[in-house]
Length: 153
Image (tube, rainbow, N blue to C red; front, side):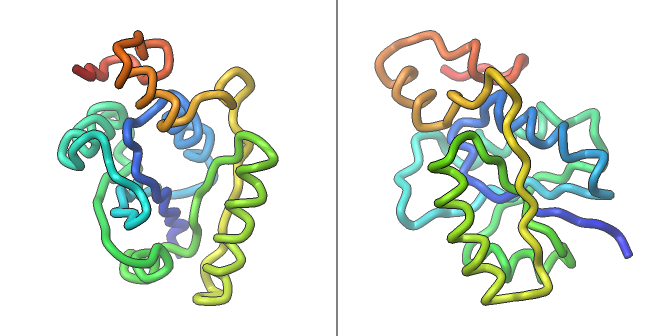
């Protein structure tokens, strides 16, 4: 059976942390679907089409990485895609607590889907999309936080 993982998020914008997590996870899975979700609690900053295009550019040399969008519950999307794993990154103890609660809820909804946590690379634990958005919103240089080849106006 193919090992398919879904890496859900808003990727608003995609960061070097997101990129590093996918690259770290590649040896673990046959396919990784980066699934850009619509989070009802988040007001997005960049259009979903732009975020999808950035991710397609970043991972264009990795045929085992697919980019998609979805609405609704992540576990339902996983079932639709025959994915048995949800991929999540942990930067700090706060992430662990938050992501752990979500993983337990997902496990209750569908015990056949397992959440896999990977620890962020040293030096990238401070990088978050919300910090990058704030720097960008106030005219700061975000180039050190986003993958090379991505242009954000």
